[in-house]
Image (cartoon, rainbow, N blue to C red; front, side, top):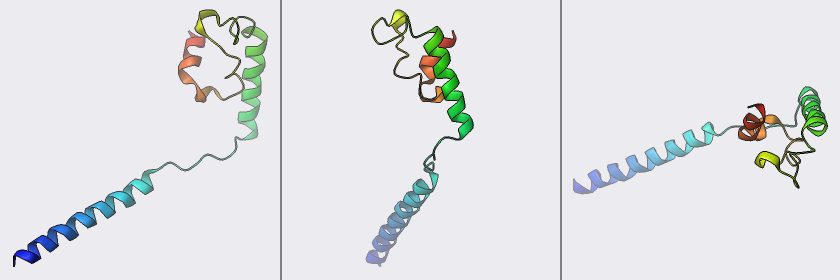
Length: 89
């Protein structure tokens, strides 16, 4: 009788572990595909604006206010939200 109790606990633990792994795998976010043409156009507009109005002072050399926008202006705004929040303020 004692062995069956141990066996049940072992199987119950294995079942909980397996169900947790299945749930974890299903909860992962799918990988993003390439950006849509609209997103690329918005990125280009942001990059153009930053180059025209910001890059003279906020580049890798000067870094006025601690901002270096050279490296991130071609990426989406969502890639560096804290930096863009500083820019907006």
